[in-house]
Amino acid sequence: MEGFLTDFSKADFTSSRQHMFYDYWLEIKGDRLMPSRSDFSPFRLPRVLSSIIMVDVFRDPLRFKCRLMGTECVNAAGFDPTGQWVDEIANTDKILERYQWLVDNKKPYFSSDNVEWANKNFKSFTSINCPFSTDGENVDLMIASSIYRA
Image (cartoon, rainbow, N blue to C red; front, side):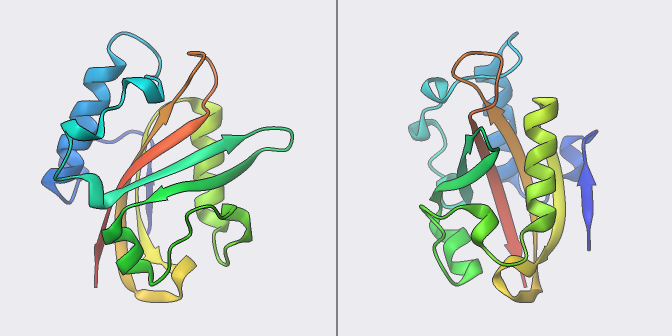
């Protein structure tokens, strides 16, 4: 199970929580390229919070750091990468390529894959990843809703 969709529809989502998350992202984005983190209110998505992953984007050099990982994601992975650089977590090459794509293109993507980075290939996940920007031009935060299956 491997997929990376840059042109997707809600029919690709595997959970109503991904629908709610993406609808909310579109709402707070409005006519802008991307919303900012300050637009995001976790209180609007209480059912989605356990599936949320937030990743900070750093530049010069481009790196990604896990800011927050919801409890459902931590349980599926078997560890909590909060505060870790993604490139220092084993088997994250595909994830890093996808993050790079999001930063370059400044728009969401949908992916499905096995949980290789947690040495749990028997588990799969789907994820809708969306960009956020403080200045309206550059991605400085990514937020995803990830759903795991055994």
